[in-house]
Image (cartoon, rainbow, N blue to C red; front, side, top):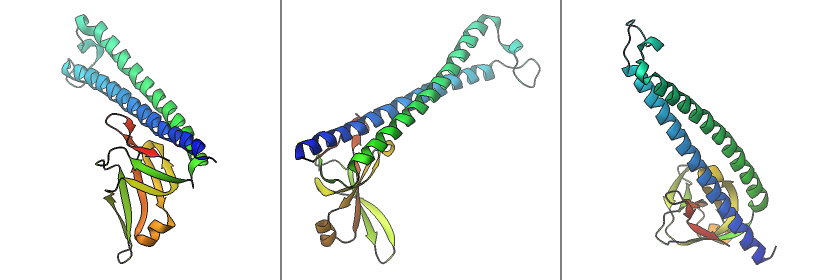
Length: 193
């Protein structure tokens, strides 16, 4: 594969991450709106009071607000159903994108470069041989070279295995976790070549 093809495909990989994060953010927003609408209806019903002293019934709702409450309830239920449908479609789409990305990129040698050198979008995973434990720490350098080990679009995570040279220099460095998308503005934090 030529360098031009690698660059084109790695741009596609970044767009997969941006698409996944955008879609998942949309699902979160839809779920939040649906939950908020449902909560509002429940609060209105709870505040209606009870004539039977036990639980609210249709007779407890004032006639003047009955139509508005029925419409709001219908809207809340529709929002819930729509957010569930959107979630299912999004999960299927992200799963499909991830399967494609894994089939194309796992094992590919890449150079990851931070777009903003002050960004904390790369973590180093360090293995402590004495304790047998792993820990992560922010990787302060602006470039990482290695092989794509895993792609997790739903977690905004690209896992990189260091090159043999890097492992020789720092044998305790096990992996790099690269957070591809800035989740605040849904733009790429890195370039891949």
